[in-house]
Image 1 (cartoon, rainbow, N blue to C red):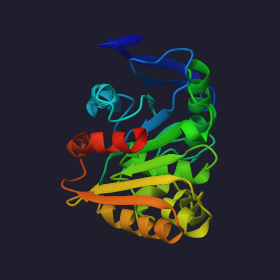
Image 2: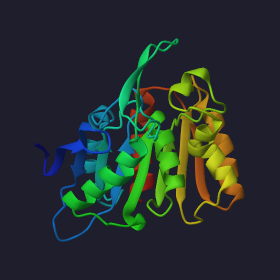
Image 3: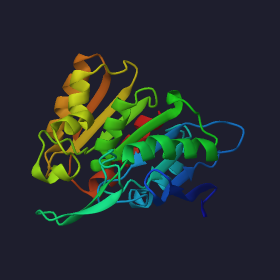
Length: 267
């Protein structure tokens, strides 16, 4: 399905994930100047735990990208919003399934091989379907809330694949909580995916660009995790930016700052 937005396009790509064993989808923004002869960089933007690929519309990403490209504030790029469900982008279970969290949140948690799904299916499918720059120099990743957490661990665990990463009010928790144990069977798995632990205990590519931000009234106090991660990265000589903007942990917070994020990726 193709949705025309002026002369840019939004394409809904439906496909069957062999890794997850079910139908999935992603929304792809193609700028007005997209054609089959000139490869373009790609931004993968990941939604939070209660979202889906429609974060493209919720955050008005496509229309703001249109305007910024037209005004030459950013370079043209493809933007992909894949569905990752409430998974945090983890390889949390060999069998993909929904688990009900009976705690205070009363929510559905999706467990499965979601890291493999993103790295081994979403990215290759995008590169096969669209005219992309097929290396890390033209590949960026970012996300909001749980999607920001997923963007950071994907970038740090697969440093050969991404040149820029953004965590926007990223769900950087400072300790393993009971509600997290549906994803993490033990501390070893928690540490394997925790962006702060990865950055502290592993080498990070010196040429990766990192953008962190959270609201000053963020209910999860995720600005604390951002500050810790930023300090670790800066001490290692990584080009990291960290901001505290006005707002709480909300859709409105991301909407009010999305142009700043696009400027980072498309500059």
